[in-house]
Image (cartoon, rainbow over the protein chains, first blue to last red):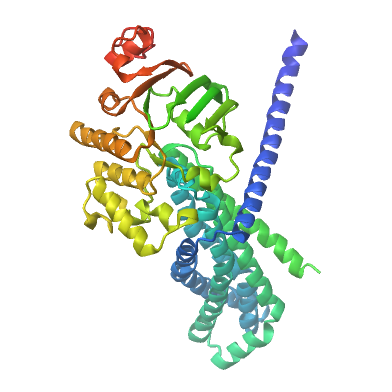
Length: 267
Length: 249
């Protein structure tokens, strides 16, 4: 009897651990199938151009102000930090190069990705989850319209195509923010700053930034759609779906950023 | 026309349908009654293929629902009015009504689809100026009417009504009941309605089926409902707290 008592907590712990591992694998499997299904629907007709246009506006155009402001302040703050840090070993002159490298390779895409998770993922998840709990998704099916084609494919395609553009804007504005702070507060020469920036950046820096943008765009929109489509019932279900989608998108964007950075620059 | 044979459906450990057998003839208006949570909506969704039964067969004109190859053509035969109307918030009313006519196999030119939508809105008692409003700007009763217009927009052979009068005041509920009856008769459609509202049952039904305990407990003409010797049915239609159906107080 005492052996059983001693063994039970261990078995209980192992059972819980096993359930958690199996649950994780099941979740990864569901997400993988959802992703494959999304890409299949993106590539096969019918295509809903009106929905795609709306998604382009929501994901791309309407995100421009938040991306621009975030990049501007981040670029400015980065210039101040590098100047202050560089002063410790008399390397203040590297501000243009490090700002360009930091913004284009890392901060630009990551900040845009996280802004997408905050603005786009949450809105997509809340919208689709609300459609689910109010039976609008069922209504779509009864009206002979596949929800993956009508709701998911246009949004993910818009994320894939517009976020690289947003990253390009974010990179440019971020570098501009650094330049502005450098010439106004740090007494840099404008022409020299810009020349150093342009000379230092290489094509792989820009390409990696845009590729990251495309990957983050897919992750941000896909997470919104996935959690929205799999939302629970009621207001609590919508809230939970929205929260989970933003957390998952943010974590996956940072993980993808690490993997892509390693793929582009580790060698 | 619609036949359900030994249909079972569970969600986890909860058994909802435990062997439903029901036949709805062409042109008939059948109303399914039963308490909350007895599986009426699940049954409707099984027929449409929105939910897959665990066991049993569902056929429409002899063709099994799960085996129907062309889903688009299959679903084009149906219209459905959802409990909360389920209108698409992002689209104006006319595009909600003409949704099926703007895409897919029934696609029409945009101006023609709009004309049909306005005609259907008129049919359910709404004026053309409602066409360009958004669902959120309408009252509950108007949303139900728009949902009804959408359900009949493509002249379906079979129309499903899920709790058509829930949440409406008695006068508006009466209006909706009348509209449903008129439309079903005039279109010659087969109708399957689920409701708790006994006034709706008497206004809409040719036949009534009572779902209880996951099975069809009673099925017969509406005229025989009041004289049927079934204690479950009697308790339900009289709304009594005392009887074989368990009530939680």
